[in-house]
Picture 1 (tube, one colour):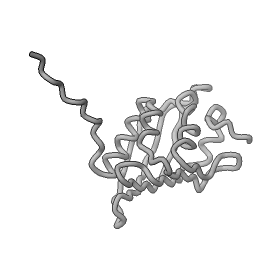
Picture 2 (tube, one colour):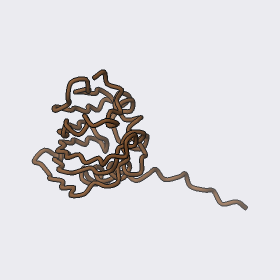
Picture 3 (tube, helix red, strand yellow):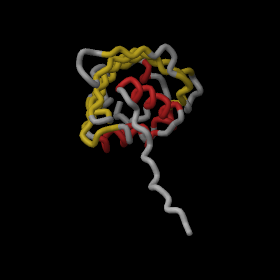
Picture 4 (tube, rainbow, N blue to C red):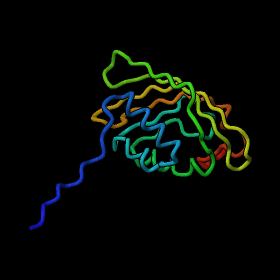
Length: 151
């Protein structure tokens, strides 16, 4: 007699906006861009208010986010996110994050060191809105342009 097997359990969904954000950082360090994109809602919005000329200021939808990020690990090799500070807000599911990403630029081997402040909103367990206030000077270094921008 065979014993019926139970269906596989779905991957666990992080319990809070803080947990989901920390999980997203782990995926970026693991260079799992497809896993990172799967954390996004289909209609999620990624905004870059400080983007320099030639870089996108807004990406609408999961597909646009996936297209933007697909070449990221080929250009920026992230090693760590030291000093991550996640602040809860009065808005449920919204956090403000202060952090630094460090690594190297693949093309030149030069150090990569970017400071960020992000406002992230999670809805139904997925990233719905991500405003990324990153340092625009860091992407002007040779080898940092993973977007194919027309600068």
